[in-house]
Length: 179
Image (cartoon, helix red, strand yellow):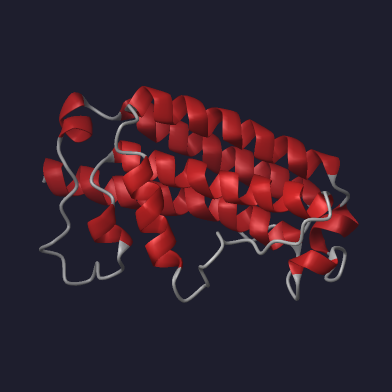
C-alpha cells in the first residue's frame, strides 16, 4: 500500500491495516498464542524487537504504548507544554531502551486486556486524525512543535506502518512454529 499523502488515505490505510491485524489476531490458534516467540536461530532477525517481544500480547501492547506516546505528545503540545514525541530522556538513537520499558510495563497485562487497550487507543488515534485538516496533517510547519516533519507522518508511523510491522512479526512466529 502506498504511503498516505492525504487525510482520506491516512484514515483508510490506518483502518485497513488495523482490520487486517485484528483478523490475523482472531485467526491465531491456541498453539500460536501459547508458544513463546523465538527467533534466535534466524540470523536475519537482528533488530532488538525480535528478542524483546515474547508473545502476541507484547506486540499488541507495544502498539498501544506508541499510540499513547502520540496522544500524549499532541495533548501536551496543544496545551502549550512543549514536549518531544519520545519519552523524556530518549532519542531516536536510544528509543529501543524506551521500548524495553514498555515491554516491562506490560508483563502483567493479559492478551484480552491488551487487545481492549489497543482497540480503544486506535479509536482515539482515528478521532485525533479526524479532528485535523488535510493541511494540518501533511503541510510541513503546520505545527511548530512537530519540527521538520508532518504530524501526518507520525500518525502513519503509529498506525498503518506499525500495524504492518506487527503483522510481519506475528506471521514470522506463525510460520516458524507451524513449519
